[in-house]
Length: 178
Image (cartoon, rainbow, N blue to C red):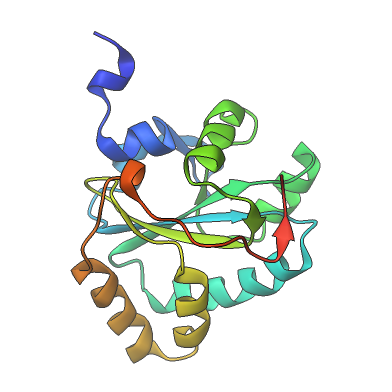
């Protein structure tokens, strides 16, 4: 039986391990997402000015989530390992490790039709199903208000989700990557 046959739906999307911000070690994806309802997949890069601005907004949003319901996973479009390390060093969440998951990152960008960054896509943490790729705008509107942040999390959880292969993706973001 292949490794993918044994993987959970979210592991087949994000891979078997995520880079932990807490200790810089690789953690099993299933353990990192245990107890989470949602995964916000953050496509970004240090070289992209709109990404740097949105990263600050996303940090504000993330801090108001109080570790409940959602985990953010950074997917790097950085041009070097130094850029990745510097930029990820400013983030409080998990990442696909650019050192060990380059093929996974490329595959995910293609599968999600990522043509521009910053892009924030929300997936169901248990099924891997697509909820939205418009989360950047939604987070920007809610980030400064605790009640709006929690209401947005509940709204995402209540939305109908579809398998990633059936998702209808929106137009590109500010910085073009391909």
